[in-house]
Image (cartoon, rainbow, N blue to C red; front, side, top):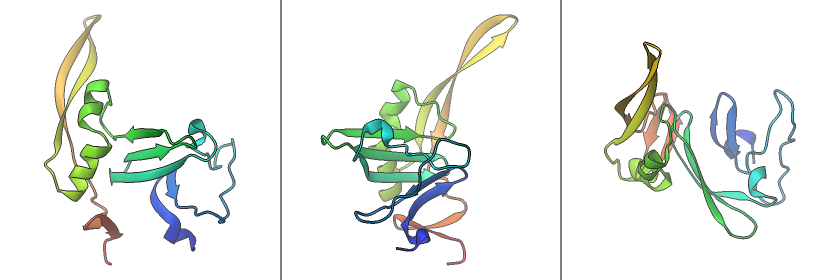
Amino acid sequence: MAPFQSTCYCFLDSIFILVKDGEKFPEIGQHLGEMSDELAEFGEGAYIRKFASVGAKSHFCEIVNRAGQVFTTSKAKGITLTNKAKTLVNFQSVVGLIRDQNEPIAVPQEKFLIKDLAVHTEQSTKQFKIVYDKRSLISTNTLPFGY
């Protein structure tokens, strides 16, 4: 499989690639500029079963370890993923945004401010939505503009 065909997602310092049984796995390192294995914390043999992304730096994964336990990871650009926010913005809700073209998700956010030597909190709401503005969304796939 050619490298570009096995790339599922990439942005600046992140890349998700598909490596099938028997294919060479990229070299992993500990230094600047080297690849790291984000699945290492889930143990040897862990793999991403499902992946969804609604834009740069916003991706969600279902990970299965060797024992069959399922974990989810969440990255949502611009959203602080508190426990309350995770109930709204999670793998299932993101799949709904993509497949069903659901409305944006209103996510409550809390900001801490220092004013007159005192700490205050400010409540706000952010809209979490599909933000593919550099690619064409065709069904559940994307292509660079011009294709």
